[in-house]
Amino acid sequence: MEFKHYAHCQGIALAHFQFTPAYRRDIFKDEKVKSEIVACMRDDAQKMGVEIEALGFGPDHAHMYLSGWKNHAISRMAQQFKGHSSHVVREKHWDRVKTKLWGNKFWTSGYFFETVGRVAPDDIEWYVAKGQQKHWADPEDFKEVTLVKGQMALSDYN
Image 1 (cartoon, one colour):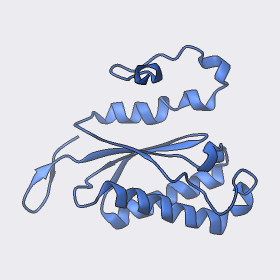
Image 2 (cartoon, helix red, strand yellow):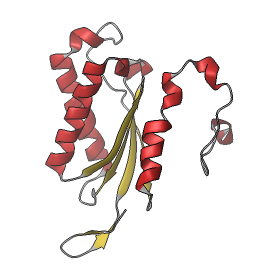
Image 3 (cartoon, one colour):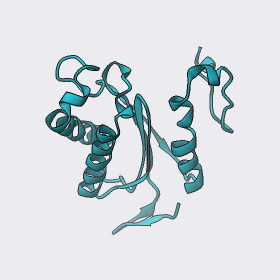
């Protein structure tokens, strides 16, 4: 990652988001729904003037790394990405997801975010592309998950 130059400053602003569909349903197994979410997120990023460095999906969640977001609040970006994509999916593809969801809700009310320092683009691509493969496989294949250098296990939080 290179420093981005702005009118009166320079720096790197990277954020990692994870968004989860309501009830943690496997919505993203449907390629049409997933591609609609990708299109919405790319459109929103362009409108906000931020860059999507990486975007990847497990069957029941989406990961996104953004750069160049220094003029936006984390909460506002999450609201924009989730709100717009939810509206479009409900409008265009509700028949494809309504059996997995209840009411008019598409995303959970919360989200995960972290701001990250300088990260090599290869590391981001690996995490989003390869790191998510475990979510698409049979859970029995992953009884023992190998952690990435520096990654914490869920048991570390107990």
